[in-house]
Amino acid sequence: MTSDADTPASLQPPTSGLPPLELSRTDDPEVLAEAARDDYSLHVVPRSWRLRAPKMALAWSALMSAMFWVVVAAGASLVVGTVQALVGLAAAVVVHGTLCLVMSRTAADSGQTVGLFSRAMFGYRGAAIATLALGLTGTWFAVFEGSVLAVAAQAEFGGPVWIWYLVVTLVCIPLVIGGVRQAIEKVNAWLLPVFAAGLVLTVVWATVVHGYDGSWLTAPPSTPTTMAGPGWLYVFAIYMGVFSNVLYSFDFARMGRPQDHRVNGLHTFGYTFYFFTILVNGAVGIYLVHTIPLAEVSESGLVVGIVQMMGLLGVVFIVATQLKINTANFYVASTNFQGLFSRTFNLTLSRTTWVFIVGALSFAVMTLNIFTFINTWLSYQGAVLVAWVGIALVTVADARRRGRAQDVAFEFRPGRVPRVDVAGVLAWVIASGVGITLIATGSAIASTWALVGTFVLAVVIAAVGKALRHGRPTGIATRPHDPRDEVDDVWTDRVRCHVCHRSYVAVEMDRDPAHDHAAICAACATSTAFLDAVAAETPRA
Image 1 (cartoon, rainbow, N blue to C red):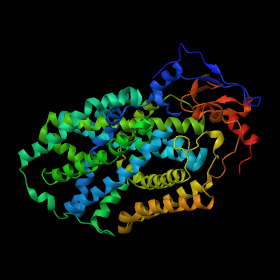
Image 2 (cartoon, rainbow, N blue to C red):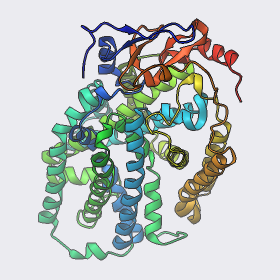
Image 3 (cartoon, rainbow, N blue to C red):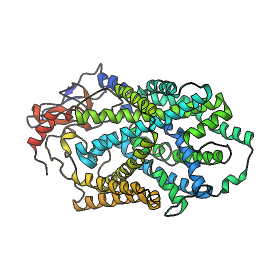
Image 4 (cartoon, one colour):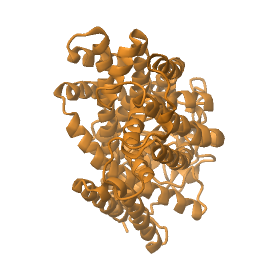
């Protein structure tokens, strides 16, 4: 990471009478100070701010520790039996690993957030749906995981649970204020060994206390349910409900270095990560549910069982698991809410401010005790995010088929994408609508096929849409005067914005027709004046 404090900016010779670009080859100190708080949440991440693969893996390991992974597999094994559950887990590892391999590479190449990348699929306004959905997902997951930690503390120390809700919230907030590079990676470097040791210790402790019974590996269903397919597919469909992880990986992987594609794609975000996250955690959950007598098979039920068995050590283990996962939840929620309100309502608050807002919101929701409502919301929202993943895959595949360089393939600048990409939004709405309708029926077909059908439908509709328009995104303004064409390297050259007077990498810069085509950054280019001037300058197709 470099600073341009001692390096004066140069002026690019004017092109066709345009104002010259004010260029530099090093990072703007004001931008770096902002990034330390906001992690470039409204901008493309420059290559100088990226993390090396080991640090990226530590930061992303936050997702590995959610009790969700342990409990869902445990519950699924009671419905379909251990063997079918393990097959479903293995299938989920392969699919999640493949999706995150593709998406993590795309994010690292482009340096974009989910919100920025979504503009290439749905247009400037249409992308707001993605940021809203992901922001809510992060908040709801923070509520669930925070409540688990509060229940563990109450089980060991007593007291009203709302006090522990407050304590958990106050502890989580400072852990994510610095973002991935400044805080989350460092926090998880400390918590990962505690989590790993705690997971092993829990299995050993349960075996010593309750004995070992090898029949857990072949245990039949104990609470069978009607399903429209094999048991493993039923389990796999459950894990499709957390395709939100694919979007999480995008917001994290934009911090990765392109030269680390292989290690990050295969291991940090891909197959190795999901082997441990889904299969190992899931196997532990299946073992524990057949070993520890539990009042109920739920996150809180398992947590209480662990704390009652292990005492204070159990609390330490739960603290490590839940603080790790909530660093990711708070980060994703705050990043996406910041982007949503800045771009949609022109309300630009720092990501730090949004961390506090997410904390206050999650605390309020925990005290309202509306977990059933949130669970229902997440089941429907799962269809929306599954459809997003399907359309994103088609978008990436189409760009590669046409041989476009991945670091500039996905246009996101407000003045060069449509307000709403009708074809993309229709694909999203139709596929999501079908999935939500099926889920609402509560039928056996829905529990097995709703999300699978949503994904397939999204891919088919998006692919047909690409084919019908010959791969050309509809409505993109073919505007002249692109700063990308005026610099030597869009990732090395920084261009000064005439609005905020800060310099950002040229790949995100545009020309402002409202101010004599002066250079403007991606965040400042969200103003109504800029968008109206663009519309007047170039009619949309």
